[in-house]
Amino acid sequence: EDKVVQSPLSLVVHEGDTVTLNCSYEVTNFRSLLWYKQEKKAPTFLFMLTSSGIEKKSGRLSSILDKKELFSILNITATQTGDSAVYLCAVYDGTYKYIFGTGTRLKVLA
Amino acid sequence: NAGVTQTPKFQVLKTGQSMTLQCAQDMNHEYMSWYRQDPGMGLRLIHYSVGAGITDQGEVPNGYNVSRSTTEDFPLRLLSAAPSQTSVYFCASSYSRAGLSYNSPLHFGNGTRLTVT
Image 1 (cartoon, chains in turn green, yellow):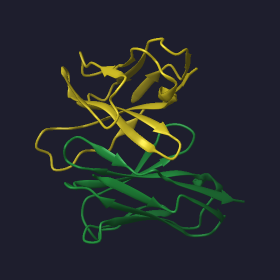
Image 2: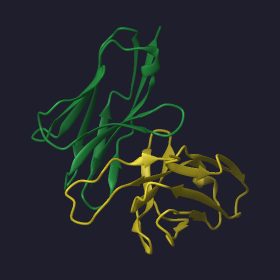
Image 3: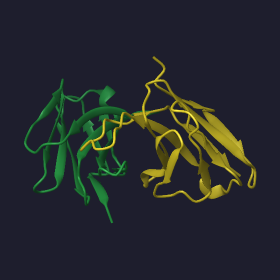
């Protein structure tokens, strides 16, 4: 059975800290891995990764994929209270299905 | 640009009642889907559609029906609501073409919080 596992489940840090969120997957027909940020409402798209070793970056956020070891990490540097959210990882399997992990809840304290 | 619009935002039903959750997108996306989100369970796929007239089941389809008569709309029907269907429901769409090796990111609506008593 295909699955996506995120760790840690939750994390509390102080402003200015750097955090690393993990996503491992076992998906038969991997096509792409996506990261989303979910605050109170809809998940919003952060990154889509399809190739190993190529870092995607947006401001203080970056992500990289390792297709050999079947995982991805999302890094957030110099965290701010506005980064507090649930971060979701999903894998697209090429059959029109996205398999989501349960998410990592990040809380950034001022 | 409205994106994906879901209505209603909140709904309370009694066991056995029926209702339809509405979803509309204005991005001309062929792919549309419904997820439910429960604490500790993540987002689970209920049904999806790859184009008008085509629907298929996801991971948790029981108790739900869908139809896709137009590209824009993808309603989700609960025929006889049960307390186990208390959840937050998200509609999501993406650009999709057969033969693509990867899909484009999902765009989500703001969700419908459903409580069944």
